[in-house]
Amino acid sequence: MTSAVNIAAYKFVPLDSLPELRVQLFAQASAAALKGTILLAEEGINLFLAGPAASIDAFLQGLRADARFADLEVKFSHSGGVPFRKLLVKIKREIIRMDHPAIRPAAGRAPGVDAHTLARWLEQGADDTGRPVVMLDTRNAFEVDEGTFKNAIDWRIDRFTQFPAAVQANRAELEGKTVVSFCTGGIRCEKAAIYMNEAGIQNVYQLDGGILKYFEDTGGPGYEGKCFVFDERISLDPALAPSSV
Image (cartoon, rainbow, N blue to C red):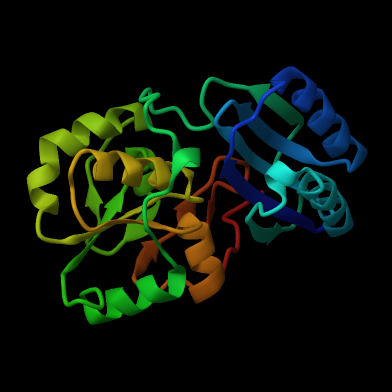
């Protein structure tokens, strides 16, 4: 089985002419023989693709030639084969649905914490000011069941659109703490952190790059189990090895 490079990336950036962009990106990804999914919306891009290393490099070079994606940050992992069956490029209302159109990440992000800083905070049990740190899992319940950070808050939501109501119902358990929202690749926890900030909850951070970047940069200290992914690998362990293909 041929080895494949898997990439996950997103960026909140205003996009227009979405039908034309869809055709362009489908052609570029097809030419590189990649499989996976690219989601486009007026708020940005979200993609999960896999293929040979040279093809991934060629596609990313072409994508970053567009000034809107020049600084696109990408998470990498490897598998024994391509874990997608076809290539899809879709236009959506949101690249991650929250049903809160006032939340516009392109207008300004919530504060982020990088993987190494978070690993230090978890080891200390507090942030650098001495405030206790709580990890808030913004993913769906079935994803959390595959693995999560030790003692993470899990509100057992079934879909991300339920997250705002869960915040309002449980905000008391976040008071007086440094809250780090996290998700698979960073996109959900970015919107979640903005929502919590705008709801008046203080000391909220997002885990930059999500669980996948945390695994890639640190090896996953403080994380228990695996990280569910939405492809045929099923989940990845902290060494980014897949459960299956």
